[in-house]
Image (cartoon, rainbow, N blue to C red; front, side, top):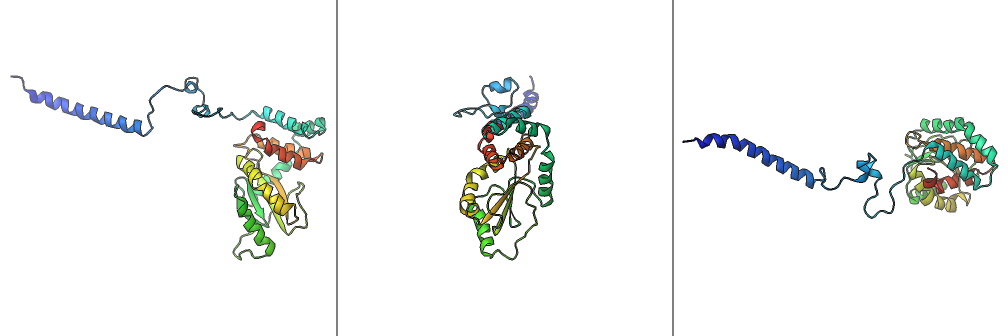
Length: 252
């Protein structure tokens, strides 16, 4: 008679192993780690899967533009202000404003700026694209002179760019920013209009902009900072500054 116990001893470990595999596979599928279905076309073509439009989206995200294309867009932006195009192009291509941008970067680093946007209101730091109400609280404290005694202040140079508002204003606001930074663009769109209306245009706050291009992640920010300064040579600094933020997506 054939001993069936040998067959049982041999098959039980196999059954346990197979069962464990099925359970593990099921967990991975339900957890989203293993996804079943068709392979996206972009993956088949060795493209970045994140660039594929999700169901229901209108268009796929645009890839960042090359520096040459960004420079071309910066020059096109200058043409909207009817600047002396030849003078502007020569200024931008020469890189003559790079040292001025570096001065802003160095000064920002000295006072602890490591991201954008970053603000100093009478030396009090506010980091990030925060709501207008947060600026209002600090500015109003400075205007009436009831800031907490524990407030930390830093001495921050205003830089060499033209200010907005009255230089005799009681409150000085300095922004370190990056023209390609989406959070800086959000501040420009959401909080800055109210700041201008309530404080800068009324002579309560004088506002200075300083360049802090994060070139490691925003390759077009450096040339944009230089371009704004080139426009400033033709007395159109703030007009060009505004166009850069208003057209972030198209330029960069």
